[in-house]
Image 1: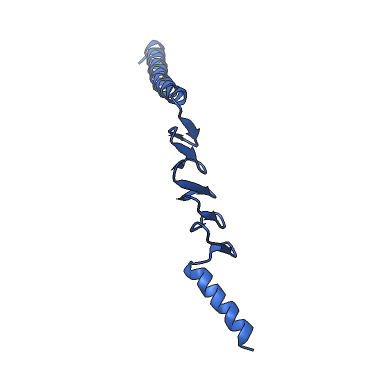
Image 2 (image 1 turned 135 degrees about the horizontal axis):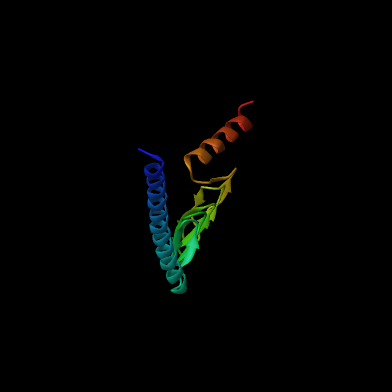
Length: 121
C-alpha cells in the first residue's frame, strides 16, 4: 500500500463522513419543518415536545389539557386545584399545610403531632 492508496482511502473516508453528515442534516431539517408546520397550526413548543392548541405547557415537556387542569409546579393537577409546594396538589377549595395538601396522610400526621405536643406537657 503506497501513499496514493492511503490518500485515496483517506479521501473516501472523508467523503463517507460528509455523506453521513448531509443525511443527518436532511433528517434534522425535515424534523424542523414538521415542527414549524405544527406551530403554524396552533401548537406550542414545550421543552422537547409540542403541545396542541387544546393544551398548555406545564413545566418542561409536560402538556396539560387547558379545559380541565391546573399546572402546579410543573405537574398537571385537576381543574381548580390548589397548588401546594412544587409537586403537590390539593383538591379545589382545600388548603395547604406546610406545603402539603390538608387531607394528605403526611399533613394529618403533622396535625396529630402538633395536637399531641400542644396537649401532652
